[in-house]
Amino acid sequence: MTGAAADRGIIWSDDFLIGIEELDYEHRRLIENINELHRELLAHVDMDRVEDTLGGIHARMQAHFALEEHVMVSHEYPHYPEHKAEHERLLDEYTELMTKFERAPNLGDRVAMEDILRQWIVDHILTSDKKMSLMVVSSKKNIATIEPSTLGRRFRKLMPGKGPG
Ligand SMILES: [Fe+2]
Ligand SMILES: [Fe+2]
Image 1 (cartoon, rainbow, N blue to C red):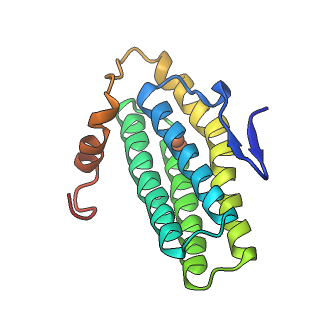
Image 2: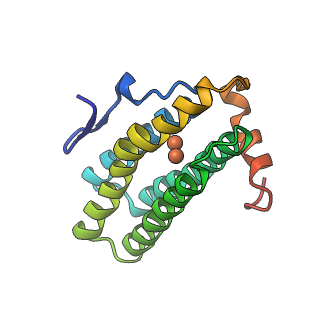
């Protein structure tokens, strides 16, 4: 089954694959990060560690959205504005919940925060990202294969002015 299992986190399935290698790689890493967060929260690990994981997910989401938006723009994807708006909404909601949770950790905010992350993975990838990839993959333009090790550098190029490095 694809999706979230409350106690085990999100179970990876090939149903998540959208057929664009570098984005699939990122989706998989994001799911791993979200599951890592889930394990840490269940185990009541040190809040400093949880904050590192939350920040890491935030940075990865931002970088992932930037890369995906770059792919959409370079392929003149017609639904780019709606898709970008969805990214912005997801990032805003997650940022708000993350900040609230860090300020005063409590179960209600924790559940809402994890729900947003899972909803994004399950709904956004399976619907919006797949819809986008169907058009992009079928377009004649080539999508350059990116080695995972070069992704960080590529993200930084795509996000000028987004912090150090
Ligand atoms: Fe997306
Ligand atoms: Fe995505």
